[in-house]
Image 1 (spheres, rainbow, N blue to C red):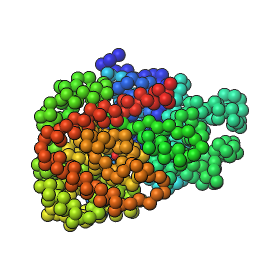
Image 2 (cartoon, rainbow, N blue to C red; image 1 turned 135 degrees about the vertical axis):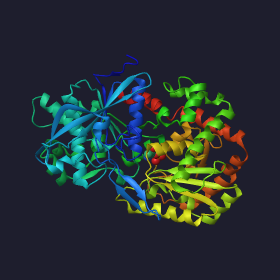
Image 3 (cartoon, helix red, strand yellow; image 1 turned 90 degrees about the vertical axis):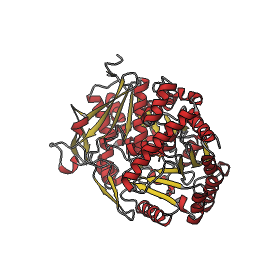
Amino acid sequence: MSGSGHVVDTPRIAYFSMEIALRDDLPTYAGGLGVLAGDTVRAAADLGLPMVAVTLLHRAGYFFQTLNSEGGQTEAPAQWNPADSLDELPTRATVTVEGRPVVVRAWRNVTTGTTGQEVPVLLLDTDLPENAPWDRTLTHYLYGGDAHYRLCQEVVLGMGGVRILRALGHTGIARFHMNEGHAALLTLELITERMRSEGRTAPDMTDIHAVRPYCVFTTHTAVPAGHDRYPMDLVARVLGPRGEFDMKDVFCCEGELNMTFLALNLSSYVNGVAKKHGEVSNHLFAHYVIDSITNGVHAATWASPPFAALFDTHIPGWREDSFSLRYALGIPRKEVWNAHQQAKSALMRQVNQLTNVGFSTEQLTLGFARRMTPYKRPDLLFWDLPRLAAIGRAAGGLQVVFAGKAHPADRDGKEIIRRIFGAAEALKNTVRVVFLPNYDMELGRLLTAGVDVWLNTPQPPLEASGTSGMKAAVNGVPSLSILDGWWIEGCIDGVTGWAIGSNGRNHTMGEAPDHAADADHLYTRLENDVAPLFTDGQQHFTDIMRHTIALNASFFNTQRMLQQYVLKAYF
Ligand SMILES: *Cc1c(COP(=O)(O)O)cnc(C)c1O
């Protein structure tokens, strides 16, 4: 089948995610969760896994960000036309929302793996003339609207998703994988199917036991507010009367429906997304057994053109087998350095074109891009401006590139962007700082490959995994990062990058963060380790680059991640 393409017509795994980053030009994702989902689908295609993925269309996209000269963010809908890049399927399904029938259609994207195998992704859409005007908007806004809107969306994703799969004839699905709790209502649909097949009109415990083996749940957040919860009166209004909610132990707690608990209660396998996050989740949800499978990135998606060419020359087969990036140790230093200089030049051109700030390829350049929100502490680098300026002067110049969106409702996140603009202005003559607007996959690829060091300063233990540092690793870019999430596993100090803070302190939930100590350590590492290494010349720096690829890109990728899901969760 290789070459002609082959869509599996009997998928065994249905992967549900509120957002999936399918392609650079489709605004169907907001951030890390969606990029991970996209990288998962791409790896599933590489491995030839019999997977089908389900998500919502997000016709209005995740927003287009513009920033004014003070760093004030405004949001506009990201315009796109699904018919330009997706196939509309004739199949329809219907869900009931507040007693109204809502018709759901699906658009199909097909992701092709390295050996020609294909994984279909179904993007659900309620914008059909037969639906009421408000129902037509249910698949427009990703993470928009109020709790009522979100719950109705989750009916479309979870219940509508299962019904569309059945309408397409997919009866052989052995695992329903919920990528975060947004899709947890699929469990109710599976219970209804089972109850009906047994000729009953009320669910009982045998349905729960029968459904559980089909369900897999991956939790992604260590921030309690990140878990969707809905008041039971809202749930009753949207879903109508359901026998499940009389089974209090399984379905509701304290007058609300918590999507995380729903997914936990109905799944036979549950995991967090890094070892540390697994531990944190076991504390948050003490009555459950939560395993961990550490996230990854899809190497071929995140390798910049110069590194992809380098790997094609020295590690043929790296696209089919990410483990083979281990052999990056044998790539001549000079070639690694040249590839990095090319990736850096590409970023510098973009920065200078967009901002006219005059970045130089000669200077040590740090990168930071992620959602702008307080616990990620994007402005920790600016804790002590005179000290940072002194470090910059001693290093013979320092440049920093930022990017990231704040959720439209996150006032504190928006304030952080303004503070970064303020710091950039204050440092103008010593450290050059730019903030590039509208962070997306394309900019992410340019940034993670084009800087010298990737910075991450979250407040531990709140970073579940983090994946942008893994993209940097594919391009040989070491991380300077707080020990949290994946970096606890990925950091070999002085070999693959540098740690800020000590993991020995073993952060627990609720422990007061010590921003001053973390900032102080960040400066110390920059001053004593990162800057000297960089000014020291290519030799040692390219050693670090090769170790970063060989040790981290070979492991923190979605091919390895999916193989672990296959072993532990799927079959
Ligand atoms: C990789 C990526 C993210 C997630 O990065 P983190 O390190 O997990 O914060 C978010 N947005 C975009 C556009 C990305 O490419």
